[in-house]
Length: 305
Image (cartoon, rainbow, N blue to C red; front, top):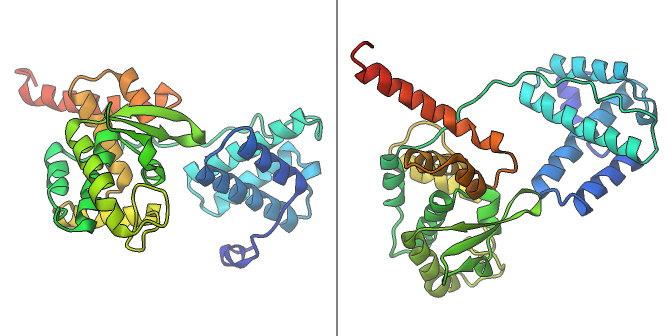
């Protein structure tokens, strides 16, 4: 099947075992909506592959999965995308074994393709300051944007965490945000005095001007909660105004938050807790940034360099 034909076929292909597995991820694992959507899409892709090749989920073998892997490579999917597909299949078949629906997990020995180690893009402190100075504080949209930028940088929030914030998630007495992260996991993040002041002013004096129709902290012109895409567009606009020519996203401010904390002397474990990383290996990527900077300093200043 051609890539064009694959793109135009109906995505509505289901299997009761897959539906039960996704239901379990929702109810028992508390998987975030975006992650659940990715699992559903990837497993539907595998069901389409089986249908295209006259196979059945019940009869899936190691050879079937190897052929699927070959097919994904022929479609020129990126290594990260292939790894995500394989992870979804491993989870599905582990569940089917646990439920006694199949006798063995044909996906357990599948190895993910090696992923390139990508250093996260981050802003300098001067670039962050330029962006923060841009929103017009006498305008309700400008004030909203300034508060959003402050929180993304002050708390290292994911964009999904930012748009999901509700007023009661902020304790003005302690200056702490309650964040609901991936998988519904809760963490408490302190924010500095400037961000506290902006957020308090927004909630008490500005948010009501939007005639709120939703309960979230940040609203669009219609009083509805801001979407992730809406925040993305706002960040892009201010980056361009600040003269930042490279591509950045809301996650860039999260990376900048972590990088600047480490530059200031914070320990890796504390940064892990503030970011809400379940595994410290996810936080260790920032040590590579630090190592690169230290090497540059060494090369520049050491008398023997």
